[in-house]
Structures are given as structure tokens and as C-alpha cells.
Amino acid sequence: MTTQVAPSPYSPTIPNFRLAWDSVTLGAYKKCPKYFEYTILSNWTTRTRSIHLEFGGLYAAALERYAHAKASGSSHDEATLTMVRWALENSGQRVCSTCHGAVKVPDTGDFSGCGGDGLDDGMGWIPWLPEGEAASLKNRYTLIRSLVWNVEDRLGTPFSTLILANGKPATELSFSFPLMELGGEEVSYCGHFDEVVEFDGQMWVKDDKTTKNSLDGNYRQTFTPDNQMSGYTVAGKVVLSLPIRGVLVRACQVGVNFNRFATFPVPRPQAVLDEWTRDAQVWITRAREDALRGFFPLNDRACFGCEFRKVCAVSPSHRDAWLREDFIQRKPWNPLETRGDV
Image (cartoon, rainbow, N blue to C red):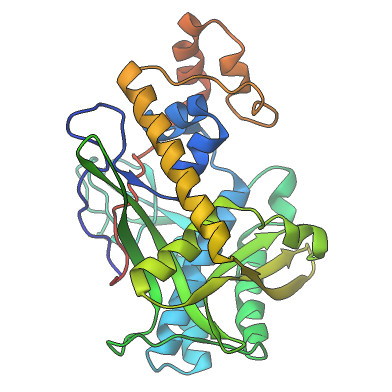
């Protein structure tokens, strides 16, 4: 479960044009080219990571550990222990004894850049303590509770991990396939499947979601149409060469004192997938044109709720100062980094 060194996702001849796209990058460009420029090309993000993103990321990654352990022969209890141990170890920070800075715990325990290895007896530990209005809903306790209750609920849900032709469980699968050619360069679509499962006699990409909302019909409708769900289905058909029917969503409603779960299919007819593919090719072609011009236009119809709204509201000559005041630059997003075997 290591991250391999990946090649650059960018064109060697056109600065700011990506040859590798995934649901994150394509979704950002579809939302607004300027938003894409800020978040993907320049790597700006809020100084404090969203509680919802933190919780959701930990939740999905921990469930991967359960599925992989279970499909590899562990019992339910053993797989649950593997999952909970990982979640506890990764929902916090180690403190490097050399620079005394807190470093988010990755699987590698990497402290590169500060001169210390963080491996001596002076290493400290700070648990994840979210703040703000949502902290009572999404925190370390509700994370572990949601995970344990999820896998207990899973025991009564009729789906099972697909075993691939090579005998390996279809968990933690990274994928990449050619989507189109532009100007003599191959453009690929990349991503990562948490798990591929068999359900109701058909094959589905499974995706775990958390929400505070009721798991009713209104919630289910949010996945159709949806960029991520369609992209997953196309990728499953192309990369696995299997009749993937769509995405099986495992939704978890997180309350202060409760969890509720629902498992429901999100099918995609082939005609819809063909349309999504054509649309993706058009969007990416436009992104290449923007990169050639060196200008990514603002879609002012997408400003409501956007964290960069106040940046775009000021004169372009002042925006860089506003960005540096309220945002930080994170590690570049590279969908070519693999976590699996596909």
C-alpha cells in the first residue's frame, strides 16, 4: 500500500496543460476555469482543511484497509482491527523532535525537509481535534464509530469484493487509460477505485460517502448526473474489461449520536457514458486552448459558495496578495500516483 513515484501530469511542451486528468481535475475545470487555475495549477487551498474533507478522506481510506484485509483472508474481526488501528494512527499528527513541528501522519512517516526522522523517543503525538460548528458531528470518536458500524452493517448487505482473474481482490486499484489525442500528445484519464464488487448479479465500482443529510430520494438524486460516478463507470469498463453496471454507493449519515447506512446502485446506460466521454474531450480541449493563451476565464455563475469568491471580487492586480494572505499552497495534485495494481 505504497505510493509509487509518478511522472509529471503536465505536457512537456505546453505549460499548464495537463495530460493526465481525473474526476478532481476535470470537475474543477467544469466548475470554473479560474477555480481550476487556483486549485489545480497553482495548488492554492484554505489554510485549515475542511473538516468534511478530512473526515471523508480518513473514512474512505480506512474502509479500504478493511476491504483489502477481508478479501485477503482475514476474518471480519481481524479486518476491523486493521481498519481501526489505521484510522487511529492516521487521525492525528506526529511531532518531530528536531524541528518541533507537527507533521500529518502519512503511511510512510516521512519527515523530509526538516532534517529529522521523527523516530527517536522524543517524538510526540497530537490527536485530530477538529474545531468549528461541525466538530460535534465529525470528530475522531464519530469517525471510529462510523467505521465500525459501517462494516457491521456491511455483513448484512448482499455484495462481495470481486476477485480479479489474477486471483487478487479488486481493492485499492489505481487506473489510467488513453482518453484522446491532442496536438500529437496522448491525454489520459486516471483515478482510483476503492473496491469493485458483485451486487445483485452485476459488477459495480463501490464508493463510500458520508453526509449529515437524510439518505432519502433527494440525496440519491445528487449522483445522477455526476462527473465522478460517470468517470468511474467508464474507467471500470475500459480498464477492467468488465461489464461494470455503474457505481454502488455506500452512504453513511453521520449524526452526533447515531449513524444510518444505505446501499444503492447508481447505474449508467452506455449512451450516457458515451455522452460523458465526448463532453470530457470537449472540456479538456478547451483547457488546452486556455493553456495556450495563458488565460483561464472566470465563470461568475459558479461563485456562490466558492472559497475564492472574495479573491475574484478584487482587481486582478491585487489577487495574488489576497491569495497569499488567506490561502496556502499544498502539494501538487497528481492523479498518476498509484495505490494499486491495475
